[in-house]
Length: 438
Image (cartoon, rainbow, N blue to C red; front, side, top):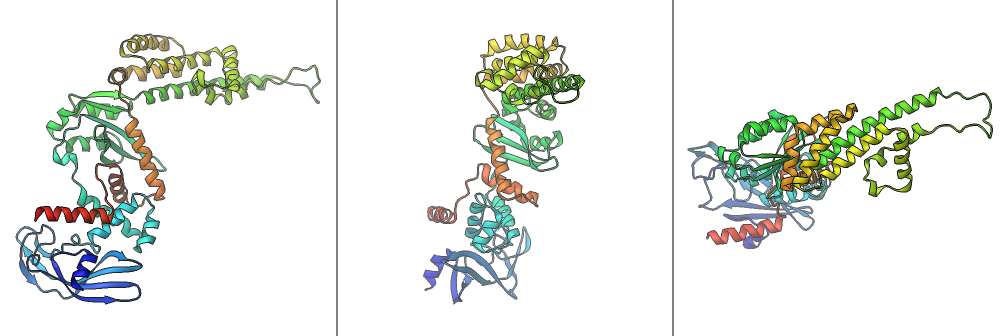
Protein backbone atom coordinates (compact mmCIF):
# COMPACT_ATOMS: atom_id res chain seq x y z
CA UNK A 1 0.00 0.00 0.00
CA UNK A 2 2.91 2.33 0.72
CA UNK A 3 4.27 1.87 -2.82
CA UNK A 4 0.78 2.32 -4.26
CA UNK A 5 0.21 5.61 -2.44
CA UNK A 6 3.68 6.88 -3.41
CA UNK A 7 2.90 6.12 -7.04
CA UNK A 8 -0.56 7.77 -6.92
CA UNK A 9 0.67 10.90 -5.12
CA UNK A 10 3.90 10.95 -7.14
CA UNK A 11 6.14 11.54 -4.11
CA UNK A 12 9.75 10.42 -4.11
CA UNK A 13 12.47 10.53 -1.50
CA UNK A 14 10.13 9.60 1.34
CA UNK A 15 8.28 6.71 2.91
CA UNK A 16 4.54 6.59 3.64
CA UNK A 17 3.87 6.21 7.34
CA UNK A 18 0.10 6.53 7.51
CA UNK A 19 -2.98 6.82 5.26
CA UNK A 20 -6.29 8.46 6.16
CA UNK A 21 -9.54 8.86 4.22
CA UNK A 22 -12.72 10.83 4.73
CA UNK A 23 -15.74 11.47 2.53
CA UNK A 24 -13.97 14.31 0.72
CA UNK A 25 -10.21 13.87 1.34
CA UNK A 26 -7.35 11.39 1.08
CA UNK A 27 -4.32 12.18 3.26
CA UNK A 28 -0.97 10.41 3.55
CA UNK A 29 1.63 11.05 6.25
CA UNK A 30 5.22 10.73 5.01
CA UNK A 31 8.77 10.82 6.36
CA UNK A 32 11.83 11.88 4.37
CA UNK A 33 14.48 9.30 3.59
CA UNK A 34 18.04 9.73 4.82
CA UNK A 35 19.33 11.04 1.47
CA UNK A 36 16.70 13.79 1.27
CA UNK A 37 16.69 14.78 4.93
CA UNK A 38 18.45 17.90 6.26
CA UNK A 39 18.46 19.77 2.93
CA UNK A 40 17.99 23.55 2.80
CA UNK A 41 14.55 24.58 1.56
CA UNK A 42 16.01 27.41 -0.59
CA UNK A 43 19.19 26.10 -2.20
CA UNK A 44 18.85 22.33 -1.57
CA UNK A 45 22.28 21.94 0.03
CA UNK A 46 22.91 19.67 2.97
CA UNK A 47 22.78 21.38 6.37
CA UNK A 48 22.89 20.61 10.05
CA UNK A 49 19.73 19.93 12.02
CA UNK A 50 18.75 23.14 13.82
CA UNK A 51 15.61 22.10 15.73
CA UNK A 52 12.85 19.52 15.63
CA UNK A 53 9.51 20.41 14.18
CA UNK A 54 6.73 21.33 16.57
CA UNK A 55 3.92 20.98 14.08
CA UNK A 56 2.99 19.18 10.88
CA UNK A 57 2.78 20.78 7.45
CA UNK A 58 0.16 19.84 4.89
CA UNK A 59 0.47 20.20 1.11
CA UNK A 60 -2.44 20.08 -1.30
CA UNK A 61 -1.85 17.77 -4.26
CA UNK A 62 -3.87 16.71 -7.29
CA UNK A 63 -7.35 15.35 -6.68
CA UNK A 64 -8.02 11.63 -6.60
CA UNK A 65 -11.31 11.35 -8.46
CA UNK A 66 -13.72 13.56 -6.51
CA UNK A 67 -11.59 13.61 -3.36
CA UNK A 68 -8.93 16.18 -2.52
CA UNK A 69 -5.43 14.84 -1.95
CA UNK A 70 -3.12 16.01 0.87
CA UNK A 71 0.44 15.17 1.98
CA UNK A 72 1.34 15.59 5.65
CA UNK A 73 4.80 15.59 7.22
CA UNK A 74 6.53 16.59 10.47
CA UNK A 75 8.67 19.60 9.51
CA UNK A 76 11.94 20.73 11.06
CA UNK A 77 14.58 23.36 10.34
CA UNK A 78 18.16 23.05 9.16
CA UNK A 79 21.06 25.48 9.29
CA UNK A 80 22.53 26.17 5.85
CA UNK A 81 25.94 27.81 5.41
CA UNK A 82 24.61 29.93 2.56
CA UNK A 83 20.96 30.68 3.47
CA UNK A 84 20.95 30.42 7.26
CA UNK A 85 18.16 28.70 9.21
CA UNK A 86 15.53 27.40 6.78
CA UNK A 87 12.74 24.83 6.75
CA UNK A 88 13.81 21.46 5.34
CA UNK A 89 13.35 20.93 1.61
CA UNK A 90 10.72 18.49 0.35
CA UNK A 91 11.01 16.92 -3.15
CA UNK A 92 7.38 17.50 -4.12
CA UNK A 93 6.88 21.23 -3.42
CA UNK A 94 8.62 24.59 -3.55
CA UNK A 95 9.80 26.45 -0.49
CA UNK A 96 7.00 28.25 1.40
CA UNK A 97 4.31 26.75 -0.85
CA UNK A 98 1.32 24.87 0.48
CA UNK A 99 0.78 23.08 -2.85
CA UNK A 100 2.77 20.42 -4.65
CA UNK A 101 4.58 21.29 -7.87
CA UNK A 102 2.23 19.06 -9.88
CA UNK A 103 -0.82 20.87 -8.48
CA UNK A 104 0.67 24.29 -9.24
CA UNK A 105 1.51 23.14 -12.75
CA UNK A 106 -2.13 22.15 -13.27
CA UNK A 107 -3.30 25.57 -12.03
CA UNK A 108 -0.85 27.42 -14.31
CA UNK A 109 -1.96 25.43 -17.35
CA UNK A 110 -5.65 26.04 -16.58
CA UNK A 111 -5.35 29.77 -15.89
CA UNK A 112 -3.84 30.30 -19.36
CA UNK A 113 -7.16 29.19 -20.89
CA UNK A 114 -9.85 29.95 -18.29
CA UNK A 115 -10.75 32.74 -15.91
CA UNK A 116 -9.40 32.69 -12.37
CA UNK A 117 -12.90 32.21 -11.03
CA UNK A 118 -13.41 29.06 -13.12
CA UNK A 119 -10.01 27.66 -12.13
CA UNK A 120 -10.69 28.35 -8.45
CA UNK A 121 -14.03 26.57 -8.63
CA UNK A 122 -12.72 23.58 -10.56
CA UNK A 123 -9.69 22.97 -8.31
CA UNK A 124 -11.38 24.08 -5.07
CA UNK A 125 -8.95 26.80 -4.04
CA UNK A 126 -9.31 30.50 -3.21
CA UNK A 127 -9.60 33.04 -6.02
CA UNK A 128 -6.54 35.01 -4.85
CA UNK A 129 -4.48 31.83 -4.61
CA UNK A 130 -4.65 31.30 -8.39
CA UNK A 131 -2.60 34.44 -9.07
CA UNK A 132 -0.04 33.60 -6.39
CA UNK A 133 0.46 30.13 -7.87
CA UNK A 134 0.91 31.64 -11.35
CA UNK A 135 3.65 33.88 -9.93
CA UNK A 136 5.48 30.92 -8.36
CA UNK A 137 5.26 28.78 -11.50
CA UNK A 138 6.64 31.63 -13.62
CA UNK A 139 9.52 32.16 -11.18
CA UNK A 140 10.26 28.43 -11.35
CA UNK A 141 10.14 28.28 -15.17
CA UNK A 142 11.81 31.63 -15.80
CA UNK A 143 14.97 30.94 -17.79
CA UNK A 144 14.81 34.05 -19.94
CA UNK A 145 16.94 34.24 -23.06
CA UNK A 146 18.08 37.62 -21.73
CA UNK A 147 19.64 35.92 -18.71
CA UNK A 148 21.08 33.14 -20.87
CA UNK A 149 22.86 35.68 -23.07
CA UNK A 150 20.96 34.81 -26.26
CA UNK A 151 21.35 37.17 -29.20
CA UNK A 152 18.19 38.85 -30.51
CA UNK A 153 18.51 39.79 -34.16
CA UNK A 154 15.02 41.16 -34.77
CA UNK A 155 12.75 42.52 -32.03
CA UNK A 156 9.46 44.43 -31.91
CA UNK A 157 8.49 47.07 -29.36
CA UNK A 158 5.01 48.40 -28.63
CA UNK A 159 2.75 49.46 -25.78
CA UNK A 160 -0.77 48.21 -25.18
CA UNK A 161 -3.50 49.23 -22.75
CA UNK A 162 -4.62 46.86 -20.00
CA UNK A 163 -7.10 49.08 -18.17
CA UNK A 164 -9.24 52.15 -18.71
CA UNK A 165 -7.73 55.49 -17.84
CA UNK A 166 -4.57 55.28 -19.99
CA UNK A 167 -3.00 52.35 -18.17
CA UNK A 168 -0.35 50.78 -20.41
CA UNK A 169 2.27 48.05 -20.43
CA UNK A 170 5.34 47.86 -22.67
CA UNK A 171 5.85 44.62 -24.60
CA UNK A 172 9.01 43.41 -26.38
CA UNK A 173 8.75 40.51 -28.84
CA UNK A 174 11.45 38.43 -30.51
CA UNK A 175 10.42 37.95 -34.16
CA UNK A 176 12.71 34.94 -34.68
CA UNK A 177 11.56 33.03 -31.59
CA UNK A 178 7.97 34.30 -32.05
CA UNK A 179 7.41 35.03 -28.39
CA UNK A 180 7.41 37.75 -25.74
CA UNK A 181 10.81 38.24 -24.11
CA UNK A 182 10.04 41.19 -21.84
CA UNK A 183 6.99 42.98 -20.43
CA UNK A 184 6.73 45.79 -17.90
CA UNK A 185 4.16 48.16 -16.46
CA UNK A 186 4.01 51.65 -17.99
CA UNK A 187 5.48 53.06 -21.17
CA UNK A 188 7.99 55.69 -22.20
CA UNK A 189 11.75 55.97 -22.48
CA UNK A 190 12.37 55.32 -18.77
CA UNK A 191 10.49 52.01 -18.95
CA UNK A 192 12.12 50.87 -22.20
CA UNK A 193 15.55 51.79 -20.85
CA UNK A 194 15.03 49.16 -18.14
CA UNK A 195 14.91 46.49 -20.86
CA UNK A 196 17.92 47.94 -22.64
CA UNK A 197 19.99 47.90 -19.46
CA UNK A 198 19.15 44.23 -18.85
CA UNK A 199 20.85 43.39 -22.14
CA UNK A 200 24.57 42.79 -22.17
CA UNK A 201 26.87 44.78 -24.44
CA UNK A 202 27.09 41.84 -26.84
CA UNK A 203 23.30 41.47 -26.95
CA UNK A 204 22.85 45.19 -27.73
CA UNK A 205 25.30 44.99 -30.61
CA UNK A 206 23.57 41.86 -31.94
CA UNK A 207 20.20 43.57 -32.51
CA UNK A 208 19.94 44.24 -36.26
CA UNK A 209 16.45 45.73 -36.58
CA UNK A 210 13.60 46.94 -34.40
CA UNK A 211 9.99 47.14 -35.60
CA UNK A 212 7.87 49.77 -33.87
CA UNK A 213 5.54 52.69 -34.44
CA UNK A 214 6.73 56.28 -34.74
CA UNK A 215 6.94 57.00 -31.00
CA UNK A 216 9.77 59.39 -30.15
CA UNK A 217 10.64 57.58 -26.90
CA UNK A 218 11.26 54.31 -28.79
CA UNK A 219 13.48 56.06 -31.33
CA UNK A 220 15.57 57.87 -28.70
CA UNK A 221 16.08 54.64 -26.72
CA UNK A 222 17.15 52.74 -29.85
CA UNK A 223 19.62 55.47 -30.80
CA UNK A 224 21.13 55.43 -27.32
CA UNK A 225 21.47 51.69 -26.65
CA UNK A 226 21.35 49.82 -30.00
CA UNK A 227 24.13 51.13 -32.26
CA UNK A 228 23.72 48.51 -35.02
CA UNK A 229 19.91 48.39 -35.15
CA UNK A 230 17.81 49.69 -38.02
CA UNK A 231 14.48 51.15 -36.92
CA UNK A 232 11.52 49.96 -39.02
CA UNK A 233 8.26 51.91 -38.77
CA UNK A 234 5.34 49.62 -39.52
CA UNK A 235 3.35 50.51 -42.67
CA UNK A 236 0.08 49.91 -40.85
CA UNK A 237 0.81 52.82 -38.49
CA UNK A 238 1.78 55.09 -41.40
CA UNK A 239 -1.57 54.48 -43.10
CA UNK A 240 -3.25 55.01 -39.74
CA UNK A 241 -1.58 58.43 -39.44
CA UNK A 242 -2.83 59.34 -42.91
CA UNK A 243 -6.36 58.19 -42.06
CA UNK A 244 -6.39 60.25 -38.87
CA UNK A 245 -5.21 63.34 -40.78
CA UNK A 246 -7.91 62.75 -43.41
CA UNK A 247 -10.56 62.46 -40.71
CA UNK A 248 -9.56 65.87 -39.32
CA UNK A 249 -10.06 67.40 -42.78
CA UNK A 250 -13.43 65.64 -43.01
CA UNK A 251 -14.56 67.16 -39.71
CA UNK A 252 -13.54 70.62 -40.93
CA UNK A 253 -15.50 70.12 -44.18
CA UNK A 254 -18.55 68.88 -42.25
CA UNK A 255 -18.52 71.95 -40.00
CA UNK A 256 -18.27 74.19 -43.07
CA UNK A 257 -21.16 72.41 -44.80
CA UNK A 258 -23.29 72.56 -41.65
CA UNK A 259 -22.71 76.31 -41.39
CA UNK A 260 -23.88 76.76 -45.00
CA UNK A 261 -27.02 74.71 -44.32
CA UNK A 262 -27.86 76.83 -41.30
CA UNK A 263 -27.72 79.99 -43.40
CA UNK A 264 -30.39 78.62 -45.74
CA UNK A 265 -33.70 80.12 -44.61
CA UNK A 266 -37.07 78.67 -45.49
CA UNK A 267 -40.47 80.35 -45.44
CA UNK A 268 -43.26 79.50 -43.07
CA UNK A 269 -45.54 76.54 -43.56
CA UNK A 270 -45.04 73.32 -45.37
CA UNK A 271 -42.70 73.40 -48.40
CA UNK A 272 -44.36 73.52 -51.83
CA UNK A 273 -43.75 71.07 -54.64
CA UNK A 274 -41.67 73.62 -56.54
CA UNK A 275 -39.46 74.46 -53.54
CA UNK A 276 -35.80 73.51 -53.53
CA UNK A 277 -35.16 70.42 -51.32
CA UNK A 278 -33.00 70.78 -48.26
CA UNK A 279 -29.27 70.46 -48.88
CA UNK A 280 -28.02 67.31 -47.13
CA UNK A 281 -24.36 67.73 -48.04
CA UNK A 282 -23.35 68.12 -44.39
CA UNK A 283 -25.08 64.87 -43.49
CA UNK A 284 -23.33 63.07 -46.36
CA UNK A 285 -19.91 64.32 -45.26
CA UNK A 286 -20.63 63.37 -41.65
CA UNK A 287 -21.42 59.78 -42.66
CA UNK A 288 -18.51 59.43 -45.12
CA UNK A 289 -15.86 58.43 -42.60
CA UNK A 290 -15.82 54.73 -43.55
CA UNK A 291 -16.03 55.52 -47.27
CA UNK A 292 -12.97 57.77 -47.03
CA UNK A 293 -11.09 55.15 -45.02
CA UNK A 294 -11.60 52.36 -47.57
CA UNK A 295 -9.62 51.74 -50.74
CA UNK A 296 -11.41 52.75 -54.00
CA UNK A 297 -11.64 49.14 -55.20
CA UNK A 298 -13.54 48.16 -52.02
CA UNK A 299 -16.22 50.87 -52.16
CA UNK A 300 -19.87 49.95 -52.68
CA UNK A 301 -22.27 52.04 -54.79
CA UNK A 302 -23.46 54.22 -51.91
CA UNK A 303 -19.92 54.95 -50.80
CA UNK A 304 -18.84 55.73 -54.36
CA UNK A 305 -21.61 58.34 -54.60
CA UNK A 306 -20.35 59.94 -51.40
CA UNK A 307 -16.82 60.15 -52.80
CA UNK A 308 -18.17 61.69 -56.04
CA UNK A 309 -20.13 64.24 -53.99
CA UNK A 310 -17.01 65.15 -52.05
CA UNK A 311 -14.99 65.45 -55.27
CA UNK A 312 -17.51 67.90 -56.78
CA UNK A 313 -18.34 69.98 -53.68
CA UNK A 314 -15.25 69.83 -51.47
CA UNK A 315 -12.05 69.46 -53.52
CA UNK A 316 -9.91 70.16 -50.43
CA UNK A 317 -11.21 67.02 -48.71
CA UNK A 318 -10.98 65.02 -51.92
CA UNK A 319 -7.33 66.07 -52.36
CA UNK A 320 -6.55 64.83 -48.86
CA UNK A 321 -8.28 61.54 -49.73
CA UNK A 322 -6.14 61.18 -52.87
CA UNK A 323 -2.95 61.82 -50.88
CA UNK A 324 -3.94 59.12 -48.40
CA UNK A 325 -4.54 56.60 -51.17
CA UNK A 326 -1.28 57.50 -52.92
CA UNK A 327 0.62 56.92 -49.68
CA UNK A 328 -1.05 53.54 -49.18
CA UNK A 329 -0.03 52.44 -52.69
CA UNK A 330 3.54 53.69 -52.24
CA UNK A 331 4.01 51.53 -49.16
CA UNK A 332 3.28 48.44 -51.28
CA UNK A 333 5.90 49.23 -53.94
CA UNK A 334 9.47 48.01 -54.22
CA UNK A 335 12.21 49.92 -52.47
CA UNK A 336 13.49 52.01 -55.42
CA UNK A 337 10.02 52.95 -56.70
CA UNK A 338 8.75 53.61 -53.19
CA UNK A 339 11.63 55.95 -52.41
CA UNK A 340 11.16 57.95 -55.60
CA UNK A 341 7.37 58.21 -55.24
CA UNK A 342 7.57 58.97 -51.51
CA UNK A 343 9.80 61.97 -52.25
CA UNK A 344 7.22 63.25 -54.73
CA UNK A 345 4.42 62.62 -52.24
CA UNK A 346 6.24 64.59 -49.56
CA UNK A 347 6.60 67.56 -51.92
CA UNK A 348 2.87 67.52 -52.77
CA UNK A 349 1.89 67.15 -49.10
CA UNK A 350 4.10 70.07 -48.07
CA UNK A 351 2.45 72.27 -50.75
CA UNK A 352 -1.12 71.07 -50.15
CA UNK A 353 -2.11 74.09 -47.99
CA UNK A 354 -4.02 71.68 -45.71
CA UNK A 355 -3.01 71.92 -42.05
CA UNK A 356 -3.58 68.27 -41.11
CA UNK A 357 -1.75 67.03 -44.21
CA UNK A 358 1.20 69.31 -43.42
CA UNK A 359 1.37 67.80 -39.93
CA UNK A 360 1.32 64.36 -41.54
CA UNK A 361 4.16 65.46 -43.84
CA UNK A 362 6.27 66.49 -40.83
CA UNK A 363 5.61 63.16 -39.08
CA UNK A 364 6.54 61.08 -42.14
CA UNK A 365 9.60 63.24 -42.72
CA UNK A 366 10.82 62.48 -39.18
CA UNK A 367 10.31 58.74 -39.76
CA UNK A 368 11.49 58.74 -43.38
CA UNK A 369 14.37 56.30 -42.89
CA UNK A 370 12.30 53.95 -40.73
CA UNK A 371 9.53 53.75 -43.36
CA UNK A 372 12.00 52.98 -46.15
CA UNK A 373 13.75 50.38 -43.95
CA UNK A 374 10.43 48.59 -43.53
CA UNK A 375 9.89 48.49 -47.31
CA UNK A 376 13.47 47.39 -48.03
CA UNK A 377 13.60 44.63 -45.41
CA UNK A 378 10.01 43.46 -45.87
CA UNK A 379 9.17 43.35 -42.14
CA UNK A 380 6.12 44.41 -40.18
CA UNK A 381 4.87 44.76 -36.63
CA UNK A 382 2.17 42.12 -37.15
CA UNK A 383 3.73 39.73 -34.62
CA UNK A 384 3.56 42.19 -31.74
CA UNK A 385 0.09 43.44 -32.74
CA UNK A 386 -1.14 39.83 -32.61
CA UNK A 387 0.52 39.47 -29.21
CA UNK A 388 -1.25 42.61 -27.99
CA UNK A 389 -4.58 41.10 -29.05
CA UNK A 390 -3.76 37.91 -27.13
CA UNK A 391 -2.86 39.95 -24.04
CA UNK A 392 -6.16 41.83 -24.24
CA UNK A 393 -7.99 38.51 -24.55
CA UNK A 394 -6.23 37.18 -21.43
CA UNK A 395 -7.18 40.30 -19.50
CA UNK A 396 -10.76 40.13 -20.74
CA UNK A 397 -11.03 36.45 -19.84
CA UNK A 398 -9.85 37.26 -16.33
CA UNK A 399 -12.23 40.26 -16.11
CA UNK A 400 -9.25 42.43 -15.27
CA UNK A 401 -6.47 42.17 -12.69
CA UNK A 402 -5.99 43.83 -9.32
CA UNK A 403 -2.43 42.61 -8.91
CA UNK A 404 0.06 43.76 -11.55
CA UNK A 405 2.55 40.95 -10.81
CA UNK A 406 -0.15 38.33 -11.38
CA UNK A 407 -1.01 39.87 -14.74
CA UNK A 408 2.60 40.07 -15.92
CA UNK A 409 3.25 36.47 -14.82
CA UNK A 410 0.19 35.24 -16.72
CA UNK A 411 1.27 37.16 -19.84
CA UNK A 412 4.71 35.55 -19.73
CA UNK A 413 3.27 32.08 -19.10
CA UNK A 414 0.90 32.44 -22.07
CA UNK A 415 2.92 34.46 -24.59
CA UNK A 416 6.59 33.82 -23.87
CA UNK A 417 9.00 31.00 -24.76
CA UNK A 418 7.79 28.92 -21.76
CA UNK A 419 5.73 25.83 -22.61
CA UNK A 420 3.38 25.34 -19.68
CA UNK A 421 2.69 21.62 -19.39
CA UNK A 422 -0.44 20.07 -17.94
CA UNK A 423 0.15 18.02 -14.81
CA UNK A 424 0.41 14.54 -16.40
CA UNK A 425 2.78 15.82 -19.13
CA UNK A 426 4.91 17.55 -16.49
CA UNK A 427 5.06 14.39 -14.34
CA UNK A 428 6.04 12.19 -17.30
CA UNK A 429 8.86 14.60 -18.22
CA UNK A 430 10.00 14.64 -14.59
CA UNK A 431 10.17 10.85 -14.54
CA UNK A 432 12.13 10.77 -17.82
CA UNK A 433 14.64 13.36 -16.60
CA UNK A 434 15.12 11.57 -13.26
CA UNK A 435 15.66 8.20 -15.00
CA UNK A 436 18.23 9.74 -17.37
CA UNK A 437 20.03 11.33 -14.43
CA UNK A 438 20.10 7.97 -12.64
